[in-house]
Length: 152
Image (tube, rainbow, N blue to C red; front, top):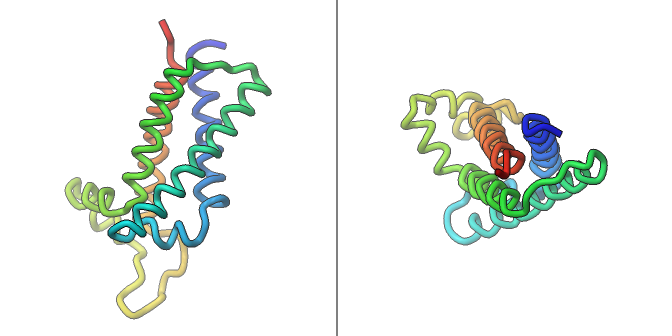
């Protein structure tokens, strides 16, 4: 498979693992707690990132078995490190909100947030969710480039 084909296949596997881990495997406790300050938030986020990475490694393993896609262990380790670190940073919430505020996206971040004392948007259709997911997808592409790129 060409480098471009390997990168595309790796991205697809990482993306599939991301979707399953973020929306099916992540526990409600992790989702509710991972953005809180202090150790409870850090530990919940770390637990989520561990299962997130495991789901992606399973997807990459299935890709290797089904399509014969192989990658360098060093590139895999480096790409997964970037992927998991950036996922952790975003899911702690404060860093991504800080970035949104500093890049002019703070208003979009708050789009759809329930008003104080009301539950008037019980959905995932918020600006914060959209910015979170686009952050993850961008870094998945960077990880795919690192993992599936040329080794020589």
